[in-house]
Image (cartoon, rainbow, N blue to C red; front, side, top):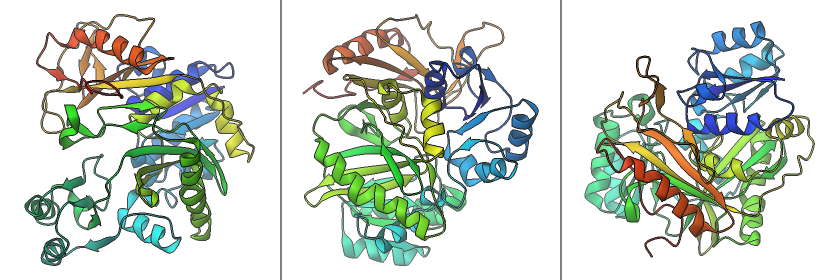
Length: 420
């Protein structure tokens, strides 16, 4: 088959890598892809939200299946457009993707269908928002309502920090339309984890849980990012913990979306936190997580394209998993998640039997033929091993190649048991 992957990040490179293992797949295209993806697939210069051009490409090139990676094209209606043309596509419609596109919608949805989450209020008026913060105190969580590339969340440990966050979103307009409305939530204390699932209507097939590290620097310090690394499975989660999350969160969400007339087919991502009352939802996403995908898909034994076909057809894909750990550490551009330089040459990335490299923000330099940076999160180095400590050691040995430059940085504590 001929498969098109829409997107340009690390998640999409992981999807491409997994599709390469399928005996059913003959050709893989990526729109627009990135420098690293270009080594594994044919990249086509089409923006991921250019819906009409994507549809035309799929028709003109006899694409058998299209898999949508990021949230922006989902909310632009790419799945609706493909379906209207009778094309096979995997992902939720724009109506279903609203569970990620609006945090206010998601919170109201969870309240309506009794899905456990933090208490909250939504505001468009800055003075009312500030008054609410003064009443509730800190710590408290401020979220831009719309899409903000993973950066629209401030976990404020002081009232001053919370007030500044509201000012930044509602007055300074840092996130544009996405921040014209803010959701203010109670702070939940506990360990976070991500639980993704293949969903089709009421059918829910959970993936291996993962935990990512959002803060920029070691010891979970610094600003929130899109994710500085992840690992899977999560040792402090039991099978019963995961079953409870599926029963009380993922399944009610799938049924609730049907009741709302927004039936969900694709990947439903639940960002969860373990509390004394059980797991609660921090956020829902309408697609695979990034960087969680990079450490979950390498553990999946199944043919990914077959899973997509089974789920879409209403069949149980019978997911099977490697008995191993996968850890991945992100290399980011200096300055991320703030301002950073692009076009910085990467050191040579040698092939490795112990590690794999997933590209996120890279491009190929026309003159040198080498990789240069094109984003904040540049790449991820991962390893699958029977023991977590061995995976960590292989990763950090590999990452020493970046220690000779000040242009990039990475956390030295991704995973568990390191620096403890």
